[in-house]
Image (tube, rainbow, N blue to C red; front, side, top):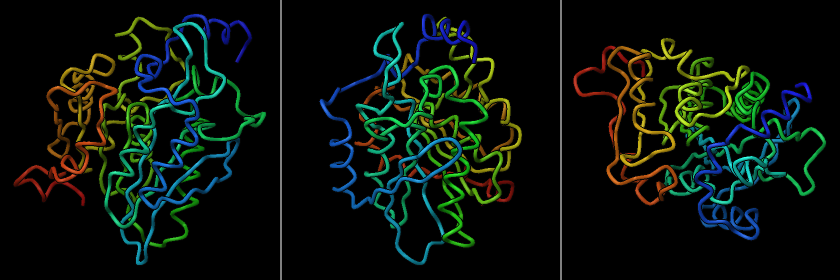
Length: 287
């Protein structure tokens, strides 16, 4: 990235996570460790090119199905114009969703540079959690770290779940992999350009957006949860994605009273009971 372009991104681009920073802990790493420990999730850092990715998991043999949670954009901005020097989320909704899941086999993936350090490694340049957070390099790294875990369990099928910007990554991974059996998103940013335009922020020309790969997912069972009062990623985003996917395997569930940064984990066990495949349409969806 040129200095001019990087400077423009820092000056103008608003990371949506700043709008919903939520409860700010004095030490978010300690808080995350406590959340994970209560859910018996074990920490492991995995190397990708060029990032070290933090993961937590709870896995019991045999591993036939693995639920994979992908975190949101984290604490990427200190203010509307000043980027954070550490994207570790202060309110890790993705991790809390994983902790609220009682399934035997659960994997949580942080986004690049979240929960790493301090200090952050030299590869953790600020653009990776601001203007380039959906770049091909980031998507490749997330795919790589997932593959590193999957290779330990031959034949495992994945159920991908992403929160906010993690929803975009979850959908993109589902579109490129052949071991994904379902997709769920929570307040998912599935149309990056639309959301940026909605908030009048700088475009991200290098961003890979799920909506551009939507048609590939037409036969995949999927459900996208949107908050009825979410002004950050409003229900219209999921509805646009649903139209782009087409077919009968994609559902939208608008949850009344929920905002983007609401306590989704509190109602997550109930939402997980929602059928992934519309009644009477099992024959056209790949389970």
